[in-house]
Length: 288
Image (cartoon, rainbow, N blue to C red; front, side, top):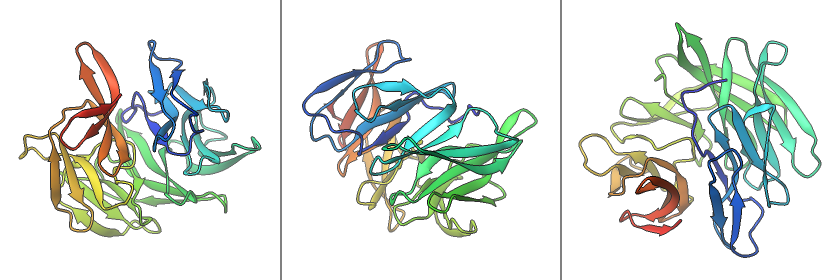
């Protein structure tokens, strides 16, 4: 449905079925890509999207990925018991969020915004109770971000908040303390989810690294693409002060969140190939 934030591999969650030992899983829809996990991994692949045309969800047994034909994206909640999917088409003139209980297969469809608006890029709060979506509308052939929708999963209710002056590439995701974050200028801005009030601005801290949670597991740091004044590509920002605490010299094509408190997940090139890798703060690949 929407194209400009589509990522090749998008969604990770630590609650995917645990590997008993080293396991290689073929990723359908890719050009022969294989995903390797090991017992004890803090992060495991639970779903991924190839643009907005195909989205794949890991089966409850954990040994395969299936194409979710009716969805343009799917995100697995912390704990792994629920999924949140955005339909590939409007339903009765509305966009929606489809929440599925993985144990029972029962689905709940919650209306979000009315056509021609769209609400996409589902982000689960860390407590697994709410989903944030970025609201957009196509204006003169280009997508414009208008605000966000917050879905209370238990109450089956959605609330949309419009915010003026957002970047066309803004995308909303949760901070560890339950607020919403989006790019703003050359930095980030934190919004109150109930009404969109600005709570703080990380001016000049760099842009968010990608669609995944940019905060470290502890919430003390967040990863950004460094501002132009630095030669290093990745910056680690102190969440309390907004200052850049460290710079990482690695040059990945993409960053998909944190592996643990001292490593990031990145797409690294090796010759003519690309590898999804774990990197430390010196830029060294420690795991593929």
